[in-house]
Image (cartoon, rainbow, N blue to C red; front, side, top):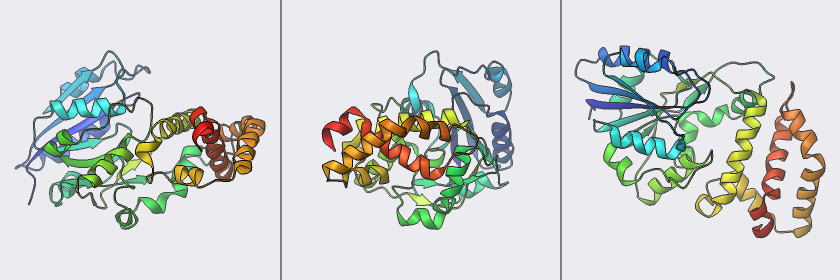
Length: 298
């Protein structure tokens, strides 16, 4: 059944989504039977790029812009936006995504399913960028065919459609205050509730990559989240499965010692001009093992 009402929700943090909103407006207005709104909420950005956003976004048809005075995080801002939405269907898009197909909205509106994930397509960047190298190495996993094999583990918040009542009944866990894994737990909760995730090929473009130092810091923050929320994420993180599968004490000690001795050099490589994905893999495992709770529980 075709969907005819849509709230497009774009949480913003240190990003510029004006071009994306203009394209979404163009597509939405070309669908005469569609009732829609676009709500962009800035989560207390620090880079100053949103200074003109209220005026520019607010001048576009059916668009609203809000700016929060304090950062509330990735989980809470999505729950807040769902509560403010006017229509039955919610389309969440990350602010750093790019709309790359002329029928992007129409594909979603014509797809059956209560939760639909469209995926993302990795663009081109300098080969010295670690995030780009990492995303390219995982590119095959982003296809709809691959995602359908493990539909709940391959869900991300960057580009998905959900019925509003489902979002209200199964909100993002607001205990996730640090970066990372709130989408993984959302997928798990949907599975436990018996709600299917439909995976389709309707990607947004992922063309903007943070610098290496920023990406490494975000990765470390995500590993702290994984460590803190391990009970909720068990079975949904490959790294956690690997770490908890190591039962030999001497191996654990060796991993921690190696990270303490060489972690600084590894991090220097990852933040440099020729970052190694193999080093990145070992750095993540070593960093995870040196976290306090990991020492106590693994």
